[in-house]
Image 1 (spheres, helix red, strand yellow):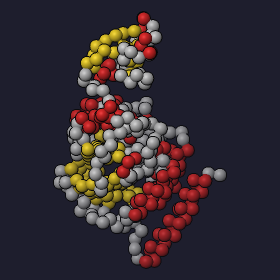
Image 2 (tube, rainbow, N blue to C red; image 1 turned 120 degrees about the vertical axis):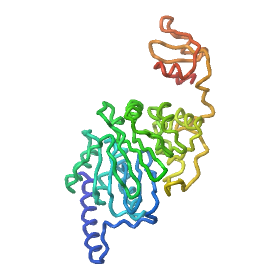
Image 3 (tube, one colour; image 1 turned 90 degrees about the horizontal axis):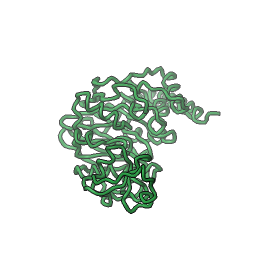
Image 4 (cartoon, rainbow, N blue to C red; image 1 turned 120 degrees about the horizontal axis):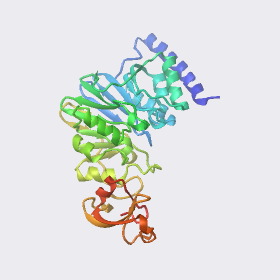
Length: 359
């Protein structure tokens, strides 16, 4: 027996009863009761190792992703606490379970005008659950088209990606730039460097005050070129405490620190709220001051990427080492390359740092 489907069926019955009772009381069940319709609020919901972002403006609401399978009811409760009764948009950035796992619960509970997901199917129970709910509620998927814009109250968002199909599911993430007055927010799902390059080439400006760091702060995203184009004041990282991926990665935190970006993290600070009045952005907490990666590396301990040093490269394994590393000493002569250069230059050439000597 599929326990999740049984739960969803029960939830549908409860929802139907709720609609009936609301009708008797004269209160439409789809009327949102948001606190301040004149402002835009972005809730970066703490869903552990996953993503879920609620955006409200002008009495309208949009949800981007809904965390893992076990987070659906948590996201539901969070939305209800904010007075959400219906959604204008539901975006599933890509079909990984840490993004759409709870989406079936949300689509069952809340009526939604427009569902946006990339043109990518995945042979998983998680993906099938979402599709089953959409069929049950007669939702059709709106494919993301680069350049298409949508309104949310006084705010507007534009699709930046995907502009093509990628082999890597993360790069198929729906990426948007959201504008509210003078404030801009960039939300990138799990888009990695190949998608970032295509976003830069699409011609739509991506400068933003707030950047939701791609792929939970992984070094596969937030490339130097991309970050320079964004020039964010703030970055928000959604990841789980003590996650097995080491998110956020030290390289990304160091890039933010060197660029003077103020960082917020759900693994340290829980759910994070940004409020825009069209000119200024306020937060429910202060930026983090720890600068410690998910695997415990303090960014202050990282080597200067621009410092020229002597390294020993293994042209077979494509690893680079310090000269006194045991792996460098035992390296076969035909694979050994000793070079004076910067750490960043070696990484750009395709080499990876040794995990033992950590050059």
